[in-house]
Image (cartoon, rainbow, N blue to C red; front, side, top):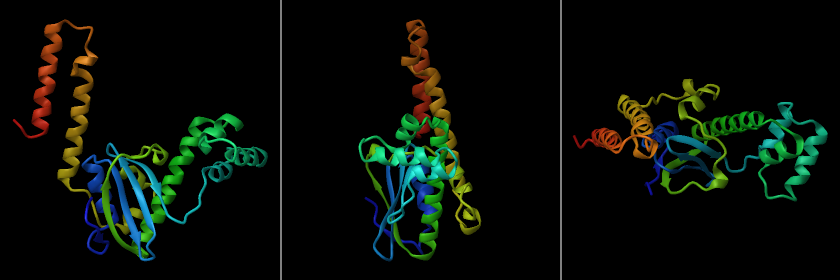
Length: 217
């Protein structure tokens, strides 16, 4: 667990970039002056969930505002929430025939609105923030968004923030993507159709690339 630091010593965006660039798993926690605890869940280098304490912005309301649910379907989905353990997006698709893409778009919109709210809280009432490593609960996974793309969708976020990810972090991220691409082509499990000698040669190439990535060559 990382020791919390006051937000006037480090911006919330900086902490988010650090967590994403290191591909850590856990939650970036921000506490405001009222003691409320907010969080951004990180998994595999992506933002997968955002929680703003005290904020009530149900997905069904967004689907209705976006025209994916009419008044009758909205009431039916809300009533079903009390009867089924399913998530609201799944209920909207099952009960009202809402397209999966419409649900995904609404989830991204919801995450964007929540990040905008967190940045505003950080600027006006933020107290401290830290990263807490640990498995991300499935109940907290609602999206899978790159942090840069998410921040670009937040109105005024770029103008408000003076923090930019370092070239080292960006280079590391590029190298990580390159290694993943090599793994998809060279891993033995993906080349079972090849002769043993060819599989071994590709596995050796992948091992050398992995060692180079970690600085062992």
